[in-house]
Image (cartoon, rainbow, N blue to C red; front, side, top):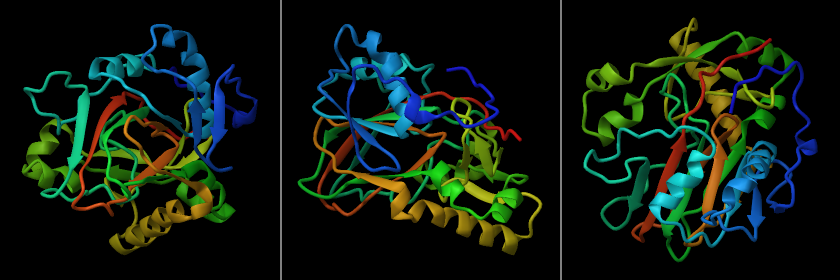
Length: 290
């Protein structure tokens, strides 16, 4: 997808999603797409409709998808180049697949609101997560519409935030998980500066673009001011009226737009097992357009 600057937000309700069988999850975000096989030989003919549904709903869900890793990768490639996450083992086949597995010896650690890989210079366009094994109950994932969260800010708060830049740092999460010193991670992935409010490159929407996982501070503010403002902006994702919640089944796929959503994996299923596989689509450098 090419980045395009819009003078006014796109009317997402007017997006043509073709003949897809779509069931919205909430008025704010999320939709389930029924009666579709993402591994079908002719899936390429439906990519434009699926892309339109992603832009319209922020996150889309597909049930009963029996995809191999190769089919998972092939489907994701329809939307752009793919990333390899630094947590992926170097000797793993299909390195585009990030395996996220938790069980009796590994409690889930994704239970905070975040957008994926904002520590990259060009954070991801989207993530496609496939459930391989799920607990009998629990382990849901919540999603938040961060454009709607932005729209709920006061006009004065919007104006203040629109001129600010935040720093995003991989070491905040992955120094511990990868057992590496921050400076070693920074050699390959230096901290990145992104606008606190970004413009979605396809819809023109303005989006809150800081998150609890990777944002370290806001430039130009004192430490106290930065912590206060970040805490205020983080809380906007916690409003249930901008959210939806997915209950996983084996074979469920969630495809979310990292440019406009945040998500939280509910880690309430320990010590049961939950095994997911994620393929991530590369994106563009965030910007703010007046």
